[in-house]
Image (cartoon, rainbow, N blue to C red; front, side):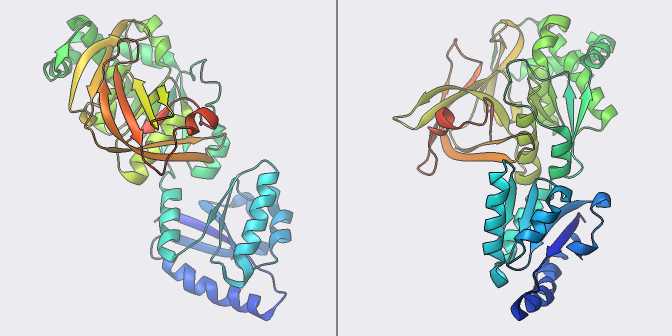
Length: 388
């Protein structure tokens, strides 16, 4: 079971506050213990420097704002505030959360039915212990997509592991063409068509897949993102096929060293149990509330059929032009230094496109009435978004 530390804050100014702190933990925490390894403690008894596991703040009563502000710098950040609303606890939580956000920090409030609270905590703890490999460094153009490794570790329990591209290049050199040929032939045979790449190019792309797969096993990775454009120069191949096959294997894999997007893809896998792919917004129609997404790789299992193409930007290597089913989709993205920001949009794929001026896999999505495409033009969390 996942360990959760619940740090309790309560005011003793009134009789109802005393009753709240005496009764609520027994009522609420007993149910939580059916799903988590719960360790509850009064704030004055906590050794903040040696907390193990995932920690949240239980605001049990009103009048606790000053107590939490006093301890603020020692608490695990970003703060997760749990409240059941009894004894003015929700009012105190809202006041405190405003103070935190006015400081420029982020916090999360968990409040509602016990079923909702359990679901929120399960989502929050699903990422504990996950390892994301960063092969190389983020691409130069991702100027708004960095994260703070330590903040993410404390907030989500996720570890980013830096791995030099030289490791990929060394392992690639050790893969024999004969070892890649069987997988390459299956990949080619299952394609609807092959346009630009030669058999040799396809074989090279599969060699890269086998090299990265070895790194996944060596470093015990759950996900990875790779500085793929640099490999075009050093290995004269692209990472599109490798990432597609890794995703099909259940290893969440993304492009361009995008730290925020690979976290989002891993979250979708762990919490929703869904495969996803990352893509660039390519065209926005505000009048029709539609957006076109495009990218040069996608897990083959997510497509109805695929054509083997060259990589769009470099006109080299191997990429995938996938055709997706015209179904409902969710668009998602986490952002911020601690991945404290998020967006979720809903819509449906209404068209697969084949525009030679865009990355190979292209879909047009019509957003539903709950989502507005203006988000991308006014407050978008970076470039890449995740679709599932």
